[in-house]
Length: 343
Ligand SMILES: *Cc1c(COP(=O)(O)O)cnc(C)c1O
Image (cartoon, rainbow, N blue to C red; front, side, top):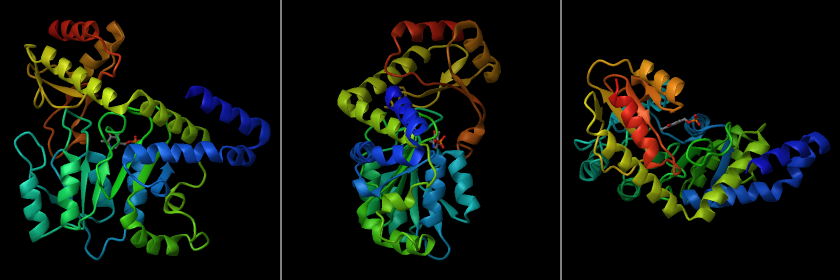
């Protein structure tokens, strides 16, 4: 992956950026194909942008919402997404969840039957705790009600199955696929092409024949990063994604099992959630920022001190996030437990 990125940077320097880009056409469509496969989307619906944040912004700019647009979300929704909805004047409709924050499918069905929002937006894998929403089942309910489902897969791509039947899925390169920074992906299912095309024909009158993915892609771009993301996606596919997903779920459960007996920290949410991400709530007034700094400075253990802005409808105070990848060992986890137990 790194070699593909540096090779492209070198060809930009030696041949010129536009020539290098033309020569990379094959690599770029292979990247689109690999992402289409992981997201369960048609190749031509896959757009490259700079980040998941840009993907959502682009989506909200071009989606053919009617008058008085609204969006259905659950309390665990990622804070910056809520801010993006508000900035664009979308009324937020809170969808029903169970005690652990999972979408209540029967409740969702009732909301969509009685007063459907213009779209439903679900963050598939929460950033701030171990919650993984049942997006395939949610997509089924939304499809039956003809309400588009938008999925934030920023923490899901490369972590869980992201081919779920949603109308739109967007994600980032740099998280679980460990691809280059500065690249994101926005993918749309073909049923929604005609509506988008009507909007895009007005916004991009000079390129009406281009595929939807090309119309939605950012113009000036980090081409080497897009090629790198394609490599990361193909490397993930060649490892056999289910094996990676299972390993990540197992490492997350092992983390929560090991940390659930700590005296001064409480694991947030069910131990058997399917995410590799875990969150710990301080129960003895510890300063999460200071703990994070100590773990990194003294032991080289990277954690995250996360603030309420990540999930403002749900979080009540800062928590410590632990986000191991496939290569984390049980010794690593024991070291973390011992370090947390000592303070
Ligand atoms: C990181 C993250 C984003 C934003 O991704 P960027 O690529 O940094 O813009 C969006 N949603 C969730 C759930 C995230 O964790």
